Image 1: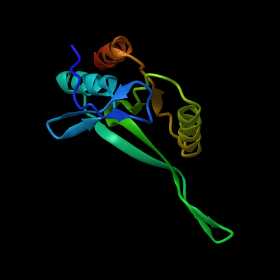
Image 2 (image 1 turned 180 degrees about the vertical axis):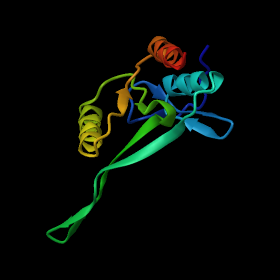
Image 3 (image 1 turned 135 degrees about the vertical axis):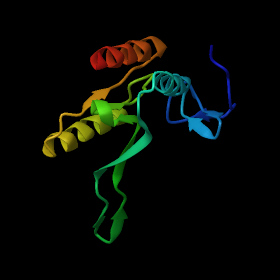
Image 4 (image 1 turned 90 degrees about the horizontal axis):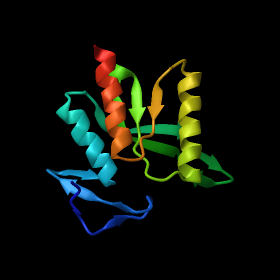
Length: 133
């Protein structure tokens, strides 16, 4: 079911292999699987949506870059963010908390889903399809 794609691994994600298909670069096989599922079922999404969690600033003459978080999928019709994560990391957990805070402060109730494998991706898409009916 999985093809190996590019031999270059994603060093940010443990055991992830970057895959390019039709000009789209995926950070992992699970990300590509979710992309294919959403496309197959006609579920609208924005791919690789970037959020600024903290603006950049200057500190004692030093420029401190903003903290950003790029989620894999934004589903506007479902008010949902999906980020496919094979393994939890401390950095990823912190950024998700910051994203939740940003949503809460804006009065948003956007759901954040973090499927870790193809089975969890399939179950999530199944729930989305059921919600429409």
